[in-house]
Length: 493
Ligand SMILES: Cc1ncc(COP(=O)(O)O)c(C=O)c1O
Image (cartoon, rainbow, N blue to C red; front, side, top):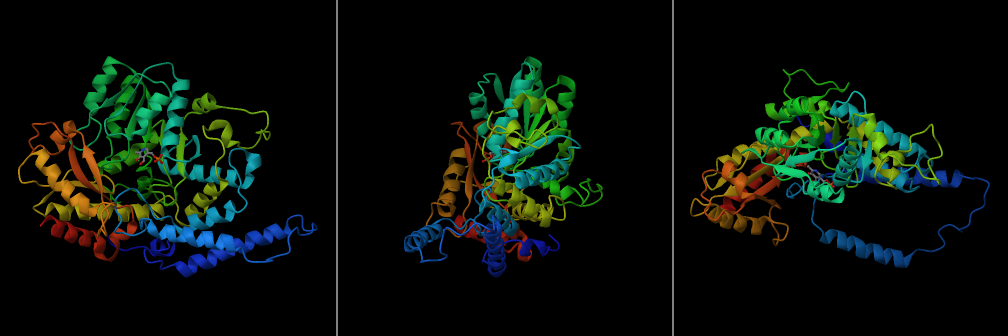
């Protein structure tokens, strides 16, 4: 990691609340402006309330109880929390959300939120450019699962038949989505030693049964592995199917590859990701549809997924009208072509404001993504030097999984040793110096990723999992990465 851009300090509250005064001043500004707007609306109407008659003791007490409970929660904002994909939301996310939540627009229909619908359209345009779609459409969703569900629903209703294929390490929602849509013909395709879909196995499956859709992971949930999208694109040319990329987690990594005009930077320029990941990110724009969640690597708080499509026919497949709304035919009514009904206009505002100051290209989100990936790569190098630990994969994105060697060279023994470490570094441990998570690799993949381990009982391999999603991990010469390494070294002894 070279220089840490000041944008990555200024736009976040900071692990110690460093930007508390800034956030407070701007929250007050948003609140003041909102109240002035209230006062000015129907300005001739008289007030219904004498202002600030009395305090609200019940509210204050309840608020204090709530704030106490907030502090009993996990400090997800801290770099010592590296267990799950929890990103600290940027300050503009909080401000954008607050400014519009106070009036509570609904982006279901234009009439429910004309300004925020336009913001959503502008944000979607940015996402289309970020993923490399020259044309297309899309919208925000409450999360990646809903975005994936809508995509497969639209695909199913616009194609005749065929199976659905996704890799065996895909997000659990895919099997549920198939159940919800009553798609019985789906298959989980084996992965290779890098936890990426095995393109040869996929081709075999396509030979046996044509596909309606193939899902490619651009960032699997467990290990952050990036499937070989280029290989699957070649299969699409040969067999013809809808190629959906589940880039819920990793899609925003493409921000690191693109300049202010949303064009790929020349290949000679270092973008801080591996050659494999870079090639797949560069190819993303050739997919048919993509799930890409602002609430994962996109710096936004929870409640912001997104789905983008290249084909107009999928929009027709999900088109919906209602007798009591969608009256403005010349305006975007997002609910007409999305699965979800009411959605917060405030979320579109949060995304809009965030991407004004931290755009989804290398001058904004890309900086944060690069820092996270740099931390993962640094960690991977350092953990390799410790005799007691063995990394399971090279980080395609910002997740690293590794196991602790056991007394014997078997999966059972490694599991026992790894779980002993996990017990001291999990969210359930008492005062853990770091909070990590666990990834359980199916025995079939463990045999490829950790071939040095015998596995007579055929059990899955438990690994420790670190998610370096906070860009602070790269700060101060990777201070927290080095500290985690020290903790792991000590805990192993
Ligand atoms: C690859 C992938 N797809 C889909 C999802 C589901 O997203 P959400 O939890 O926002 O519904 C996740 C969540 O981690 C994911 O990693």
